[in-house]
Image 1 (cartoon, helix red, strand yellow):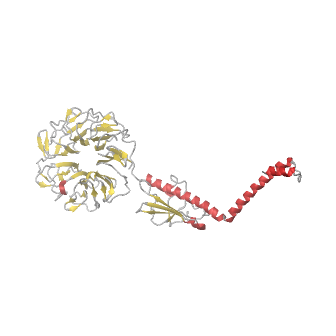
Image 2 (spheres, one colour):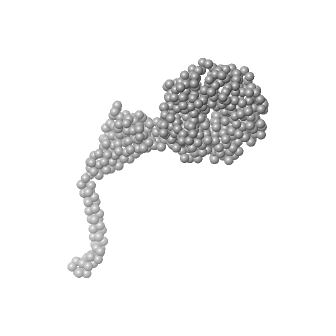
Image 3 (cartoon, helix red, strand yellow):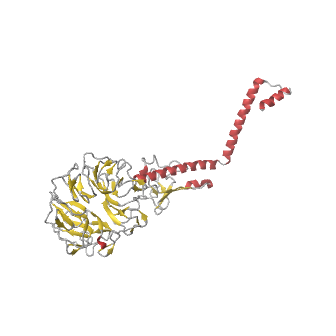
Length: 532
């Protein structure tokens, strides 16, 4: 257009145009337009430069707060729900790299350098000025963090205030364990050998597509230990195992055959899985056996139904010599109604704690729990009085540090005192008042029952057949040493079946076994492993 206009002037001869100068004039005009644009931009900025720079600083503040947020969240997850500092509910300034302003700020220096390269500071702070002008608070009830930058209120811009929902703290399962497709059935017991390998029993018949009838030994990476050969395995469910000091493995349960050999409800295996033929049980037990423990002298204590052992009547607690014969020195008077002993623990002094579904031992009342002397007679110094109502106890843990007894089941009272399916009993049989499960377990269909209990460090893990605890959906919970619910142990939607076994590996990882097929919505048949 410009050139047409100039040509029209030329044709009009009112102006003589030098074409050699025409290109220069066009370039000059383009440069003039660009210069004018720059001037206009400068003028626009000059209208409100403070606001423009404030917006830039606010962008920096938002970036800084997000960086701090990410660092705090990651620390919280990595340290198993522990915050990098004790964050108060009221906003508090984050300390600078020198810990200032001293006494009035929250020190997050533990985030440097693993989670933060350096502690960020408000961009408006001059060099040498103490503090960061960034603030943090924690609402414990809603598990929500808040970050703010008060400096962002300058020039009527909105204050940056970031509410951060608590990061996902669901206890994550080890997705590489068990290996491959894992089990095709439930797990009843988990025992770690001294070499770290894991002995697993249950109702399964396969592991990762390979035959494994009721028992298998796994390496720590979840692969099958091919040095443990069980042949055709069990024809019924093995329920519990005990490992002798020589590495031999005693197994009890509902089975009657092991690898083609008749072995009624008890068998001893060599460390390679072969049958120990030197352990002679005759016709074995006439009914199911639930529990087994090894005494310090090598004798074997077995608990289960009142039945027969190798043709002789036994009342539910049987002690065997190391060769498999019955130890006749154990007092063996029948009880009525029929007792079923589901758990056995041997104290360091040799006394035997037995739990189960029973009302008496011999002619002495013993409701749900009893302690026997080494000879098998009832220990009258352990007076349980009315005991566990309903006489239904299914899990037991003996605290090694003080001899106190944790037991769980379907009961709701001990010695007339209301308890919620779990109780801790002192060595003299009195109830431990410092321990109290204050909230109820619930189950939509059936009776809530505790099948597994374990104390790890100063925490107590409780699992079983229940749907919720204190209206929180769960069938595995953790409490502190006094029974107070630990809400930092978050299993999400949890398991879709019963928890039967809780074991900690030597490296601290947690193994959970049972009759479930899912954990927190993910496939998990019978066994999972957590970082703990």
